[in-house]
Image 1 (cartoon, rainbow, N blue to C red):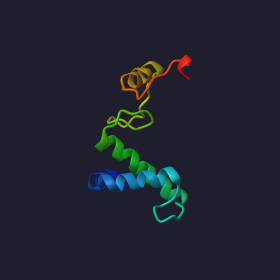
Image 2: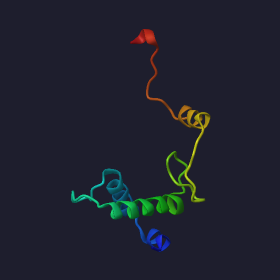
Image 3: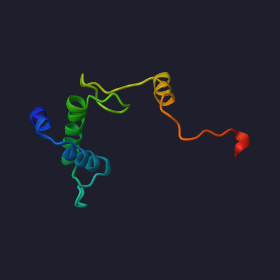
Image 4: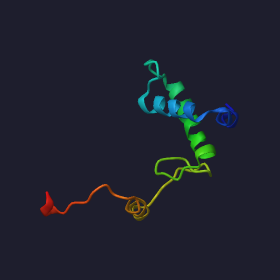
Length: 93
């Protein structure tokens, strides 16, 4: 199957729907995906992540086609830089 052509033709909305179907094992209409559909859909989602999103999030496929692995230190740094909503000390609770 030529995933490159499919990925290039895929809209972001289609990607989101396909990713949801793979995650839940069900199509949007509620029908269950068979094993072949789920496997091929997962491959297409991964190809889209690698070619279009170029995501560096954990548990995605990078632009080089390899699974992204982050160390504990890298993850801590990533989450420490995000603004927090609120912080409480033990005595505040």
